[in-house]
Length: 442
Image (tube, rainbow, N blue to C red; front, top):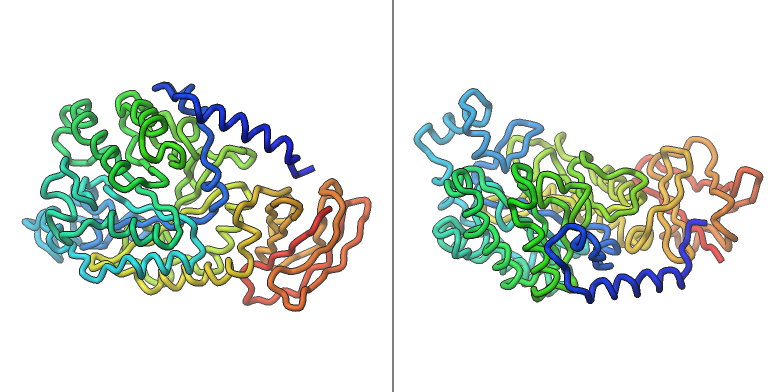
């Protein structure tokens, strides 16, 4: 059977509650026992935002991350340096972009409205990328933050307020390391003590985020980053200790092993298909996280493809964190807004088959994916069906099968055979993205 009994779920929740009431020690054995708050797995769909000084040049070679502009400038044989010299000149330093990052068109209420209409349930903003520029008034980053220079505005605070006001969860991405910070490069222990840990705690206390999404961990172990020390504080003492969710990027040995939910990036990661551990796929609509002016419409994933990606991710038990790259003046590019709204229109009709679901049984055909919730099995037809649709006989007793969104309800014929339940397939149109069948069970 696919479904877990309610009594078993109650026992699991009670055990998790008892664990959550115990103080967490500064060891991975202790930290890893903390249950991930339920809201995260129920949400299924979030919005990632890469926005910073790199949004001014907003350029990278096709297939590359534009937010790595400063890093890639260092290669004087590479495309980024050649682009930089041609358009800005050899003497124009990366830091000279900061005053041009003005965000004068930034409307956090409009952003929040787009996110709500997309059907997303949480938002993760890059508070600080590997360049070290902070989108809040960090005392540890004097004159290299969005209040001291550029926008002269607390971007983290303004967006957090707007997002929470619309009922969404708010989180922050934070890069543990910084490419060219002299203290980091010469004395990493001092950097962690005097900059990284104070900044992380400041973000948590100041904005009370629902999610802390770290990155840039790969050069050192979690001991060097003092990760378990921070996480013990976060889970024991911080104002968000009961609700906050974290990922697995806390040291070069951690991904897919320690922390909170596991992360994959453009499909690359340590998550196994049969893993029951909470996980999340993150990727951009194009090939870059930060806005890349070098990308054309052909480089962007279509709305249909993104909906199918969301379905595939949910069918394997994961969340999708889909990235947008705003412009330096604070606008979400129209093509990105359009993609988000297209996803939202599909979720408006079919969202019950995504939100709060668990992964379902594999049906042995590439054109059908499944999710489950309570006494329902959802079958997502992600491509034109070829062959029969057969559901496993051990799913239980079927009451009815119908297509979500059909009015009046489109009840479908089904019959039990030695192979399982054979279900009639509704007519497929070439303009379909994903058709969802709901199988009601006793």
